[in-house]
Image 1: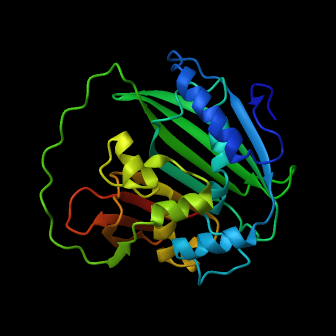
Image 2 (image 1 turned 120 degrees about the vertical axis):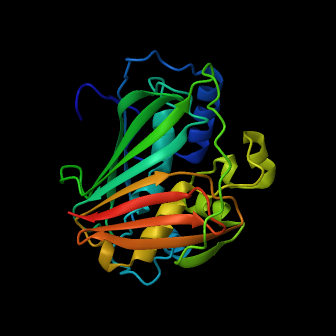
Image 3 (image 1 turned 45 degrees about the horizontal axis):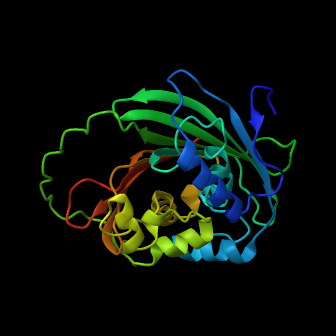
Length: 294
């Protein structure tokens, strides 16, 4: 571990009770750090195989027909949620943990990850940038199949901290309904947020129920962005996901539950597939992304 980083976790995955206690304390006390200050909290945990939980993830995200001996490309992110919570509630983290908005996700995977392997996860804060609405933060997660093995999977999570002192952004012009898109029509059940929360351990109230999502200004619960990404990647097919690959995703608008969406995919070039998750009646997409063969 580089000396500039401060370890914030033991080799065991933090428990949800510990994460909840740290989250409550940090949310009550945290003030954003001044621009230019970048503390280096670092977290590590080893995650043993979890066949039952993995099977739930596959069924929920559409990976049932994929090779059961190989992990789906978004599984490491799902199991890293407690580690992410431990990191963003660390004393050195430069923004309040509640209210962070997931803007973008990049995943690079160089080799397959075995479903029966213990995964060694390393998480750190890598960068921050000023943003017209506050500050962007980059959280990096790396996965190895042994403490001294090479990195096989890496993600960069870009989140936005909206500074409360900044004026609200100007209202967007009304969306004009577009013609129906050609693609797969999906019906997203109302309990998808709760089911994904049980698999990923991400129990953010905005995903669980209308009663809790209203506390944060959402009339209905919204699905996890990483569920949307996982479902899109599964729809591209097992062959398309064979490493080495790079996934770049941008989360554009909330997907309210229950929901009706259209999945669209096309080849941008011989090495790249573009994909999108669109509202059934047109308008701003929920998610856009590219899968690139490396």
